[in-house]
Structure formats: C-alpha cells, structure tokens
Image (cartoon, rainbow over all chains, first blue to last red; front, top):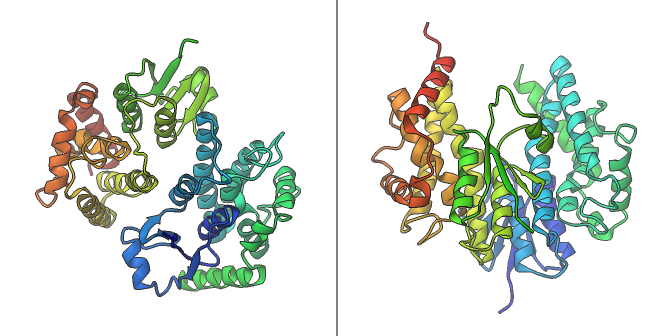
Length: 222
Length: 220
C-alpha cells in the first residue's frame, strides 16, 4: 500500500520546519498543508484536539502531534538515514539537549522579544548563558550529532534561520558571531546543505512577520 | 562488568518516584541518594550542572538528567518488562501523553494549589479541561499502556498518590465523580505491588504539602 504522509505546518514555525527537514533528509514524499493560525482548519482541530497546534504529521490517516514526538516517530517508521544515534547514552544526550532547546532557549528567546528595558537585559543575559551551554556541545565535533547532521542538528536548526532572523529584527546583542563563534561556524556548514536550505524560513517575509507581531504587542499593551 | 546504577532524588519528588518505579519494574539494582535541595551535594551539581535538579540517574559513572529522558534510557538499556511498546504509533502516543502531563496537567494542578484569587480560578478551570482530555484517553483501557502499565502510566502516576494529599490539604476535591475512568485507573495503579510498595509515606507528604500550602497562602 502506498504511504500517505501529510504535514500540517506554518511557514514561520521552527517546529514545523524541523519536521520538514527530517522528512526531506529521509526522502519521504509528503503533502504539505499550510495553516493560517488565526483561522485554523477543521482538519487540524480534528487531528490535534488537545493542543490545536501545528505541526501535525498524518501518516495513513493517523495523526501525530508535538514536533519532538513526530521526529522520533519518523525515525522509527522510516529506517533509512537514521537521525538518532544507536547508543542509548548518546540518544539520551541528544534528547536532553533537544528538550533544553525547546524548554529553555526558545522560552528565553520569547522573553527577549517581548520584554523591554531591564527585563530584556536580564533575558539577554539568560539566553547568553544558555547559548554558551549549547555551544559547548559542539566543541570538537563537526555537527551536534557528530560527523554528519542528525536529530540534534535538526532541532538546533532553529538557530540557523529563526534565531538569526529574530536577532536582526530585534537589533539587540543577543545572537552574534562574535559571541558564539562555534555555533556560527556550524551554521556556516548547515547552510551549505541543500536540504537545509530547502526548509529555510524566507528571511524578508519573516522579518516583516516578526516586526508586525511586535508592533501589535506594543499596541495591545498600551 | 558489574553494573553500577545510582539515582539522585528526594524522598518526595514525583519525578524521582517515576524513575524508582521503572527501575523496580525491571528489577534493576540501584543506590538511592536522597538529596536535601536546600543544600545540594557537590556530586549532584557535578552530575547535573545545567539544571542542578533531581532526578539524575548515573549508570557506570555516566549521568542522565530529566526524568522523561531517564525513563527512555532505562527502557533502551534494560530490555525486560518494556515500558514502551514496539509500534511507533503507540510509542508516539505514550510520549505525547507523558509530555502532556509534564507540560500541561501537572503545572495546571500545581497552579491550582499555589495561586490565589482569579489566577486560582483560572488554574482550576484549566486543570479540569486537562483532566477531561486524560479521562477521554483512558476510556476503554485499564492502563494508559493498555493491559499493563507503560511510560504514560508511570508519568501520570503522581496523581495516584499526590492528588489525595492536595485534596486533604486544600479541602478541595479536584478529581471527583466527573472523572470515573481516571478514578478507576488511580485505584488499579495503586494496587500494583511495584507501586504500592514504593510510595513515600502519606503522612509525611501531608505535612510537607501543608507547610508549602501555608507558604503560598499566608494567613492575612
């Protein structure tokens, strides 16, 4: 039976992009459905009633939600080009840092975006510490996953486009090559990979999107 | 080579308890080190420099932190009595619900316990919505894992021993007759020898959470 794979996603979401990257790295054909988050489709709400969020992968009619859960599902279902390492300890380390990126780094990035003044300074201090911790994991390695890109690179892909665009839109000293030379060296390698580029968030469109959202927030808090 | 397994936890942490249950389920011998979180050991800080939290599993000198990561490590290292099924879709379901507990349900109930006024009202409403999703997921099953317990059961397991403590301390019943399937699951879960024989003492928990409650709700 032919596999039917659909991905409900959103162009600016790093969570959605990471699933696309995994699918493309494994050469899995899929149908992409772009969601308008201000007007979610009834299909999305049916497939993810609990969170009502993207991304959702639908494989032969069965939905899987939560991007990290989806990545593991993809790796276990299509066994070619494995993205997670074999060794349980290495897998644990990859999962630990993926959680760190989602639970700490991305949360703090939002704080940096929405805060102002002293609060923003504190958030920048926090994110600097967190990025340095993550940067440590790259030391002595070609990629987060070792000799070639894998699960943690796919999750850390958020740094390659989303974070850099956020830095540019905000103009604060949050994520620069001076501060994080090893991360930026890794970014330089990632952007040379065709598949990674196919999943990039279009920069100008994204900068506009971020700026519009920040303006709307300032407006609503007056 | 002899295995060396250590678990850094506290006597009461539900995140440590779920790891204890997994180790017991698989018959893994380990050394438990109960930490005093107001005075963390140098070893703990060395093994978990990023979060400085419990639980931490140390297997032959190598540390693993974050309870969900630990549970998956345990399942992949010791293959007897698996807590995750073989089928990828079923595995995804277990992981989804484990995350739901940690990211949604538990925080909402914690907020309902610790917040006051309008924030408390909202936390209670959110908790009830979250509990409804869990109730729905359990329908037609004995355990989240089906006939036997799995990852999601271990992760939701804190409800079985801590909810009654919260209810006793606050005088507010959160899992009431609106959740018959969940109530039945809690009973079945607590009757399992692995669980029943590995619970922190109820009275000690009541004292601890009573003190915490008073801290969050100082008498005016």
